[in-house]
Amino acid sequence: MKRGLLICSFLFPIFLYSQAFKIDRVKQDSSLYDSDIKLISEIRLIGNKTTKEQIITRELTFSIGDTIGSSEFLNELEQSRKNILNTSLFNFVRIDWALSGTEKVTLIIHLQERWYIFPTPIFEIDDNNFNTWWKDKDFSRINYGFHVFHNNFRGRKEKLVLTAQYGFTERYRLRYEIPYIDKKQKLGLKVSVSYNRRDEIAYSSLGNERLQYKSEDNDALRNYSAGVAFTYRNRIFNTHTMGVEYDHNRVRDSVRRLNSEYLGASRKQIQFVSLYYDFRRDKRDSKNYPLKGSFFNLNIKKYGFGLTTKSVDLLNLQLNYRKFWQLDDRLFLASSVRGVMAGNNDQPYLLQNGLGYNSFMIRSYEYYVIDGQNIGLAKAQLRYQLIKPDYATINFINNKKFNKFHYAFYLGLFSDAAYVDDNTGYPNNDLANEIQFGYGIGLDFVSYYDIVIRTEFSTNKFGESGIFLHFVAPI
Image (tube, rainbow, N blue to C red; front, side, top):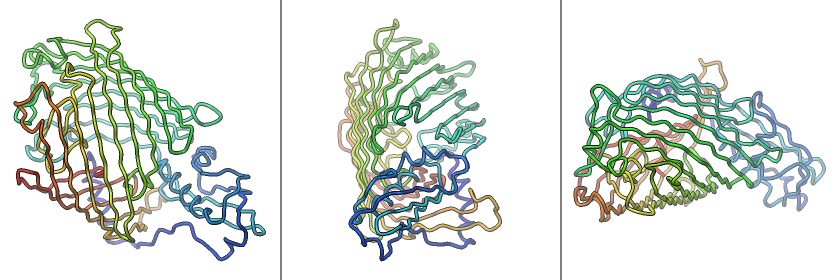
């Protein structure tokens, strides 16, 4: 979202003046069915100058020495190709194969690596979404600074992120992730530490709009946090994560007076330890903009264990299921159901659930927030592929990691519905405790380096309409 407009303005003229070619799937030839099985005798990798071989072969659905039925052979290659692309380490992947006799197969995997190190300047909007910022055009809500990303540290798919940010939110953060710390490539580790401070915060909501407090001479909110988590990926599509986090939050007396429940029980500061478990089963053909497959996520998080004084005691459960179908050559259907449940209503406003924040929203309600404890959200979208996935070559750029990019356009009809159960703020926020819905039409642009730009015209249940811009996939 943050840099989407700048990227789009750069890519679109290139798209107009570049030469496009079709993206090929794994091809079939007449010798495929000469025998009932195929024996994988050799796997060769071409183009992985940085990425270690074991990181790539971990994504294959087979190993050297495995046998695959000839009728399933191409499907296995195609699924493996998609798995490699979903690592977000490569712009393009192609798998060729050659027969030795009628059964033995040599696979040649052609890879084009991405650029992995990004010393990226920060110039971004700090708001619920781009549309709420555009409505007021409040330039004080701008963040600036820099990130340093290394998305393939040591060629092992490790991620190292350093952040120094100033402006509306001051932030210093270090995050390190290593996907595999064991020889079997199943166990991983994540570590993070951060410091955040803000002079302006939303301390409550009224009429389904945020109420803001701004400190003129000191922090409105100061936060220190740290976390460590272990991941377990026993299969290609399943990932388990178990983590522990520490948070310390402090607010000014003015925030406590405006909302005594901001940190709970009229507290000025609070610290707590959280434990969480997360399970993901991801069978989407693309994490960036899926067209086929499914995604399931279960997250259970316990805030507070009584290890510190003035702590919290809250259990949150989140479920997220998405399903994608190809109905015809150019026609696709996407749907999702998402739910959030709180173990009790006695929760600090800082940790309270709600709709309208970031991508957790009903389309056509971009200008509203709906705070509450329990949430149900359903989305559906029918997509027509206006321009099939192609790629373009930018002749005046010599770097292969940037001079070829893929793109596609999709026209979509969508509808969303949600229900927020609020037992503390209602009726001050009257959109809670009843069904809300919206519908509309949108145009999605999808490109490389996970770029998605959505332009949507939508209408809510009150007949309010508008054109809205977003920078993540809708479902």
